Image (cartoon, rainbow, N blue to C red; front, side):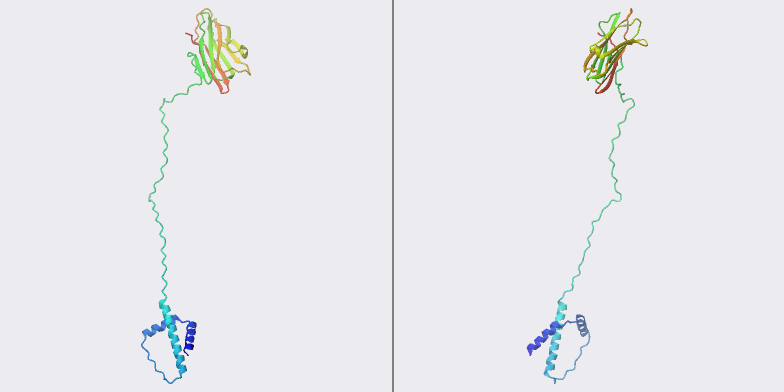
Length: 261
């Protein structure tokens, strides 16, 4: 009999699904209300009804006890507190400093009159006798053998590179009685077309390099010779000009004839 009761109690306990809310409400009402006295039931009942009633009461008590214990033992879930991430404050200046421009050095002041003029391509001073431009250098002088009746005007021409074009011109002022007596040059005479003519009160000697020929780099000489007449003559108004062209371009030199000491 006891084993049957235990089996039924276990089955009832396993199948029972208590209503927690209703049970709690009953417990609360029972605790708050006055004690209720139950009328004693007569003892003269069958043993079977008494046993079944005992089983039911024991099942209810056991199940209720388990439910209450489960309710009491189950801890309330702790609320999860999420702390929001605090962004790092951005500190900005109320008055931002503007970027400084890179200083530019001012252009140097130019004092009036301090700038040197650009020298001319050639030195046009006949009195100096010497001139230089590009690959050309020249010097004019009077032949030391010149006399009261005869004069030789000599020209030394130097070039640092071959010339594919060359024109040498000497101009002798007609002072009365001036007359051509000849020319000469250290370069082959057949390489040049040589002319002498008088124009505008000047005796003009000209050497022109023939097409297709080349004057080599080095030092070369040209000379114009003439009679003076019967008086002492001055070479102050005489002069020369040389125009040449090579691989580096064209160049010109000019000057006068100075006495030789």
